[in-house]
Image 1 (cartoon, helix red, strand yellow):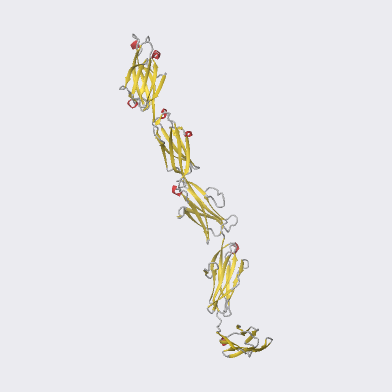
Image 2 (image 1 turned 180 degrees about the vertical axis):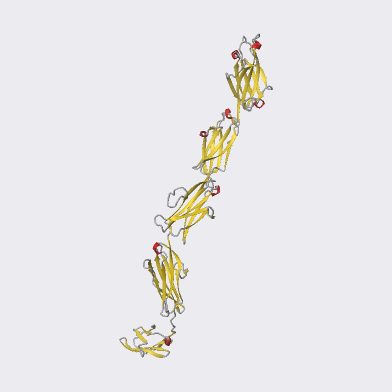
Length: 555
């Protein structure tokens, strides 16, 4: 049964009001005062009249197509007649064309008997809809009692001359709701069998934690490591791990902002120790770090349905510097005993290297300072300054700068070296050897000796002057012998020598011989006492210590 109301607004103090259906009176009311009114309804089972001093309403009972037509409200008093009318068209009932289910948040339709993914412990709203019903269909959600849910009231909206009805259910699923069915039914007087639509629950459990860390290194917090240190050109691996999910999560790796890593990735999953219905899943990526990877972020993405989480860490690639270079500060000339500064620069290493200095095998690092700076690519440029005091003994030796980086894997270094070219005045010594035997000179008791003046200097000595008791006896510029012309001697290439032949008798007064060696850089001298000849009593060569020597630098 359906009823219809029509309202007519009047001020009924004294007068008459009547309702007409297609000009046939169906109800009337006359008032002589506000308290004295008479109501007339020829068919009270079909019509009902209600009113007050301001309005009157006509109710049509059990509305059918016979009631179609125009209804007029007339009001008559001493002042005149006023009328208002409205046409009624009675429509036949219509059943809903369909019942459907959709995601309440997105409005996306869900197919009948489809499986929907929900997350354990997170609210999920689902809406049941019917269309083209007249009057509105009645919607009912059929949800298992052990599912936590709440059903909102039904809303009915007119579209054209029919209704669209909606009813939303809010559920909070748990892991116990896996596979359960949610069903919506639509009932209507014109339906012989109720319409139904249903969905199945697939309950996802999000991981309780996600970490990213270098394989083999214990993670230090719930997120893993903020930075991962790897060694250049040494195989490394990084692990991304999710704990306690259902089903197992899927992983995606990126290096930098856009590079997706696909190769050398392994996936492992196992049942969770606390709940064997859940999975612990980890992805391991193996790669060989290159210098270009330094400072980039490696990113791990874990996804499960609509869930997506990211963990990232900065990759710091340990490696020796790209290059190393030695340079002198100021004048590059090295002079014996004159302090000079030497720099060694090692560029683009990580972490900051240590720089060691050597002359030959002698470590002289204690005479140096070290400064490290971070460059534009977050690696280190190191500069060491060595305070070098050249010693003539080190001429020709190798000066080595070594940038060293010690890691847990090994100690790595990169070297640069140069040969020291030190200018120094002649270092002079005199040695003596006998040329004739004692037997061959028995009669005369004379002996022949050769004094050899040895000068070590850079540049080499070019002039030798011999003196006996301070009188010059020989000026040698042509009989000088260089080291390279005397391969039987294991001398430095800076050594030159000069020989002086002497005849001596025991009765002779001893003499003091001196040798002065002169180079472009300076001069040096040594002396020899001839009284030492008497100690030579057999064929041999005697090398004597320098009795006295002096060195003079030529300015």
